[in-house]
Image 1: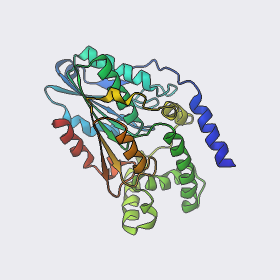
Image 2: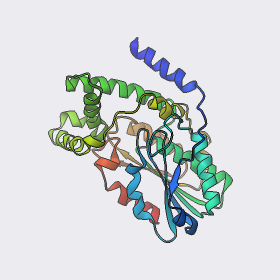
Image 3: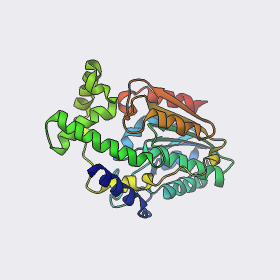
Image 4: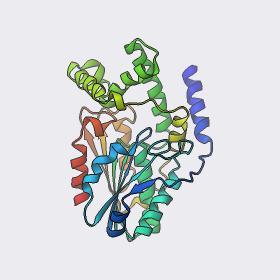
Length: 293
């Protein structure tokens, strides 16, 4: 009964309107932005700063600029604002139009992938001459999967509390982080468990609990997202890079999602979960190879 009540609360929250932000979320080097004809935009997932997308800076060059999309509460963007997919797509289209870019590569992680896909649709509709590509890392999925992901996270958090023998929010979060990174094998395979422990130890100082209320501000729009009109992605090259043991968005569901879109390809990464940028740094060279074609 408690789980049913939790799911009902999540669904009702998702039905609430998503407030429209007022701040400009994009950051970039103005000089590079003015001289380039190609643009890469890195879009982090929920509860993440743009720093997790920093390896994209290696793609910058004389004709290619790199920009980042800031989420509310991070990188000096107001914490009281909400992630709004429509606003994000409009902001990106406006920036591409103002910059006169001919090629746009959208690289998103989790919720950032949903933003990337909606921005790609808007670009194809309003600026059809612009070539668009999408690289989606550990992509979020349309409704009802975000609600189910919330339920999985609740169950996973309870399991983490049991394993940690603690109700301390930070202790439980660090324990659950191991599963986020490497999936259930982090609890059963000694070699994977060792890698998970090493990852947490290396990043413990940077792993912060989300600010109060930030969860609903980052996820409300995603919970009502349906990926409407996927045919508008015709002509967009889409590659989904997904951990084969992702505990947030299951690979089977991601495969169905990929097949629902034109020109979308799924590349599963064996032995990895939802945090590919940390557990599988080779992801950046694979994305660079995709974007260099």
